[in-house]
Length: 617
Image (cartoon, rainbow, N blue to C red; front, side):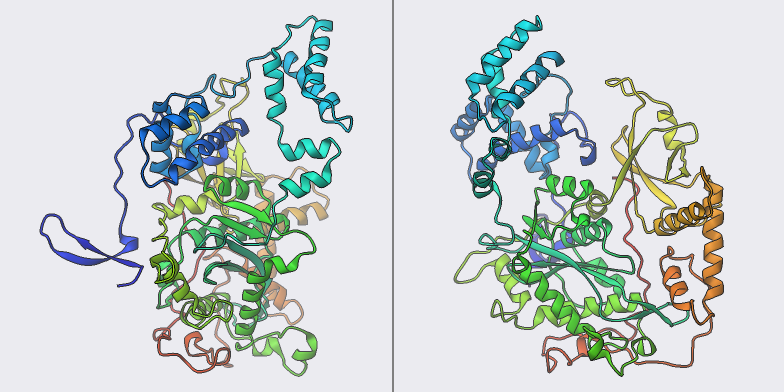
């Protein structure tokens, strides 16, 4: 029995049996005090989100105690300024969900932190703070109080309490105040995190590093088996154990979508993913990580990613400039991946000099799907089972010790697995907000409709008196379907094209069509023109597949279409190139170990498609 299974006892029959962890689900008592279903995390205002984080700050010390006494709760409640029963409600809500969003107030209206002053009074306070306090003159809080009093009397406004004014000053982030008061060095020394230094990476998933790299191998088209170019690989690694946490392989350049898919895969269990790829073996890394460390690229700074990390209490940190050594763990993993590719047909080496005399395109033999299956098999059955020089043991053993413990240190226990992997995947995907019209809604000039939208046509937000906006998510790899968050039950519903005759296309194809129409001088294009252009460009790609000069670009373009819309199969070329088995490949780590496993009879029999999401959340 390993950490991926548990010994369970049937309380009815008394029989004991071994059960896999992923087959278990927690039983929690329904909370009758919960006033409304949890909203999608993207819909909370900044003020609501801040209140949820404030409440987490107070209950966090209690969460860390294995036994919580009423006296402890009452003491914290006094500091928080609430009744101890309210604090118990906060604790119960967070323990049931594990998310910051459960602490966001469910009802609108005045609450702790609500500002009751008029807009004019608030404007006077803010301007006085900017002029007197947040300046290199470094005025005191009393200077601000006096200035507010003077300006309010001049404007014939009621003078706010000095307590209120001082509270506004206390709300200013310390680092911001120091910087604006001319103390930048002090702000940096006191509040800027030491990004990339990991003294607290003391258990599995405490710190995850993530990055991208072009794969040093050329892949071939699924139909023609001819080269289409190098894919991009996104990898995430657990710093403590060196276990690979997640990966994503695509022909598209690095993007926020790649980051989101890789992180959501790292959080979720991977048994179904391995079965889908036809890879045998165990990949027991799952759970919510404490920190994600990345470089400063724009794909790591999307609002969807930042909000998702906040909701899952993931500390998203960025590597400081000119400090490449802070990303050493993921860089070494990228180096390992590069060596893996060196054993494959179609390898491109690391520089042109090494590639001299080797025709990478002529030797290319693996499709993107086959490469993904090979890479996952290698990670699971070789990399995780070979001794890592940095930790003196295999990543798999390091993970098991971190979870189950050893003679020298206790384990942290199994990390909770997400009950709804589809929800995790959605949380890390891009989103848009749209009003609902009689025709439905549109994204990038493409219209979507379903009867579920009817109750919200031309609806108005009662607070702003403006047309209400609703949350929509979509997978850029196939935009034929979007996911509408129905506020009636806080569930996602699949909403497809209004014109069901349109083919499934990727966002990349749609943008390419829009760019072509712009080049042709057309403005104000409509949906039909866009899809006609997509069809036209697809036909050109299909026609170019047999041409010599443009065939490679055409095949790469075809590979970006959604599954099921790619060119029809053609006769396979007579040329065949042997594709190695990852588990039997001895070119990187030497002789095959006793624990190594291999593919089945046909490792590439199953198709590989983007992750699917459930229609209901």
